[in-house]
Image (tube, rainbow, N blue to C red; front, side):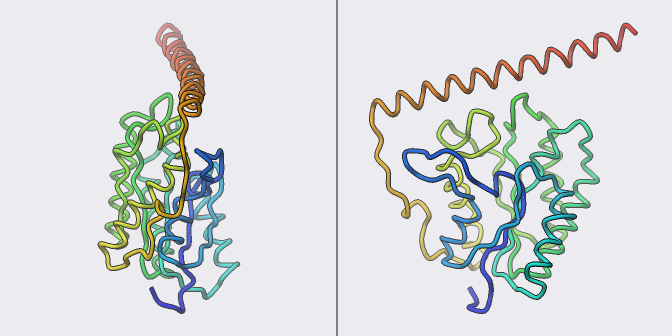
Length: 243
């Protein structure tokens, strides 16, 4: 990494913004922040909770230009689309255009640009087949702008994702960062340290049981809410057919 660069620059939604519950005493920090720590460089983030790709284009990127008009960065990170694909007005073509524009702007400021696909088993209710469209759009815009792609299609496990099947846990953020660093290493930017070596924790039998019960309770709530949403949607469709 060049000494004159400003490190890692990050954009996106709550997944990149980070923050949340401790996991075995390990703080929940952004995967992009862990990437910066792994590379041994500074970190700047404009990610915000609930952001869609339009927010990246029209709020986060302009804020970055105001903050650092001429700054150059080692790596630009963009992880967006989760809040777009779960909405009723999802439009693959519009998303791909906006995502590509965001990557293009990042490419003018960063030596390397890294974006990520989205886990296929996304959300409750599941986003379904639209996630395939989202990931195809992300890959297409990445190809068009020479961006690196972190493949997270199969990402997800009990200790890596929260019960909502959207937000990573503290360990999940680290796991994403480890994968991102592998992608950067293959492109010629190896890490100085692995994020997994920077944490220390110890589990207990009672703590594991308490964690399992908490997860089961939260997962049941999410599942019940999902079932209610599906039932209301089915009822609306039936009313539409009989109207």
